[in-house]
Image (cartoon, rainbow, N blue to C red; front, side):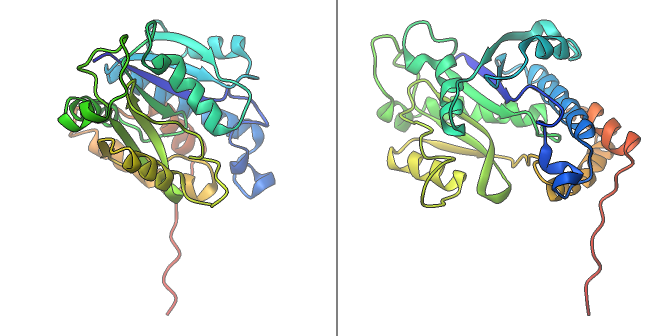
Length: 277
């Protein structure tokens, strides 16, 4: 089963990237620093997606982003030739953009699809490890080969009967998810996942949709994203822990650009309020 990894991102831009981390919105960064942080994080994420060696790596950028700037920016990753393709999403809400990214790869299982399964990864996951990606893809392949996966798979003359339905996800804060993967035969649509009138969390909706179709589901290690100052503060101790663990574990790949920016250059530290007695 051939897999593809899609890094889903906006093109970094001052005043657009990670604005909730800026001083204007209660954060620590200037607009330029927020952009620099996201660029460091995005480069680390892409490098780790490539080194996971778990499928072709694609970049899905926002429709209004500067493609020329993105191409120039991507020259800074360790192996620019490893990027299979850059494509743009469509105008619309987050559900629609995610659906387009998945459909671009899977073609709903029809002939001409670029892979049999897709793993979509956010660009703001500073502690993402190649092992997280390997685990997600491995679980998806195993689930797709089960009798249950084959039983609930969508059927088409263009789809090999050996590709079953399967879904994997990695949880993050506030009931969301930071990675999601599924096969081309999985009966799933993003509609209502991120935008629903009932106020249900994205992960809850994902579980409900998966359960209603009896799709085999796998949960991998949580990988938090960074949107607000609390997210950022929570990640700094983890980055330091990764630095130490990396001395003794060759499977750990450090997000060196993110560490350099946040810890070495900005000198940021996390703190915890002492208990009130």
